[in-house]
Length: 132
Image (cartoon, rainbow, N blue to C red; front, side, top):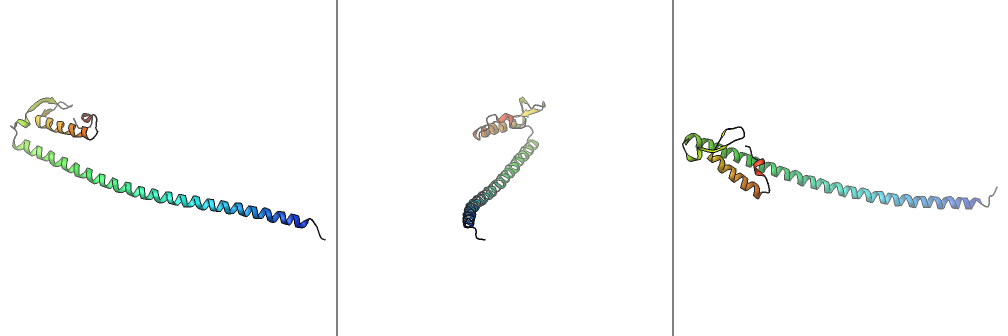
């Protein structure tokens, strides 16, 4: 039998489906835009991470060179002290380390240079940062 209202319900269904498809397409476009934004963000983070790793490697290398340099200066001081125990640089300065050991005048030269350099580098309390 022919239902005169059937075309209306089919038409309504077709319109509803079409609207649903439009909504789905908008959601798909939005999802693609979100995915592209996330991909761009991930790429930016990867680039930043690579730059940070390169900077860490550079700083580790600089620290290694400074550490080796300090070891060299310490060796020079020890060698000087062994060869010139009566030098004015080796006499008791009248100051003591925290453990009570004598600070020689050569140590006071080191401390003054350390403190001055540390302050220029932004360390406000250098005495708290050096071994005493």
